[in-house]
Image (cartoon, rainbow, N blue to C red; front, side, top):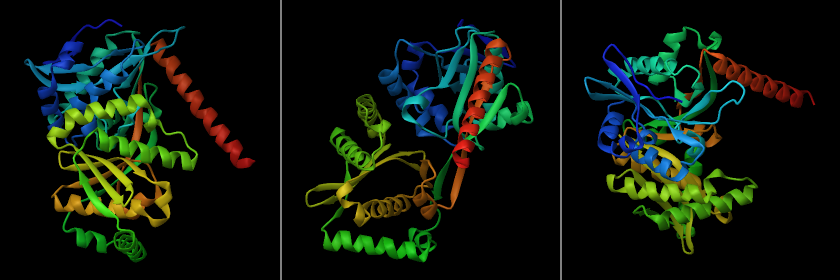
Length: 378
């Protein structure tokens, strides 16, 4: 794919070199903080560390930078991989999305610049002719700049030949307004009783304590071990257990912990940790990234007790949101009455490569629907 530049209305789009990516930490994060909903998964630390650990010969960075009057106004962090041999055209994916499953993704731009930056990027992509087939924007919310811009561009993306949208998941969250006591009293009476009972039993009868630990590799190793053991007990294969994932998080923690972005919390019994939480704290929000629970303690409900402590601590710290991230697990409905829908947009090249890609995705969805319907009939 050739990398030329596109300019209109003063907004100029180009592809970042690896050196530009490597040296852009300060300007990159400043732009993230200017977003309407800043996300830790869009920070330089998260994305550059991802490239160090997941970049390979089959992937090529395709990070689009938008400038106006020499000032950086927008970043769309993509990479390209694969394509269709018969018609050409690469897949353009959101950096880190296929390996680390982040959400609340979006263009990195201040609200007043987002639409103009996206328009400039789109013009740039069209100038690439058949150099790409499809751009996938996963796990974006209805409030995101990308969602709004694509809706305005197509009027009805569900009927547009160049864009489609599929609902991916939901992300529950707790607005941290008022006091923790007021929030907790608003929960279901039975739930409150169960939480209090489990706390009393764990703390008084089992000598369990809530522990705050400085983030380091040892904390990460404990979390991974608990997560692995529970996954084995449930008979599932967890993508979180891979060695390269551990390496990524170890390096990310080294970069992000000094800024206060990483939070490890544990419930510890006489023999060691029985539950662990790995949270990310950024721009006033807590992101509940991963948990681990000792299967031998599951009947005591340590996950529930740990969550109680985490939410109470977030209120005490004066943060504004506790975000459970993607997933419709039942316990999230019990703790949070707010959520954001998460969807995946695909933007297709208007040329042959894009039309072929759209046809392939449509066929896959139809096959999945028919298969699911067949399972229901049986």
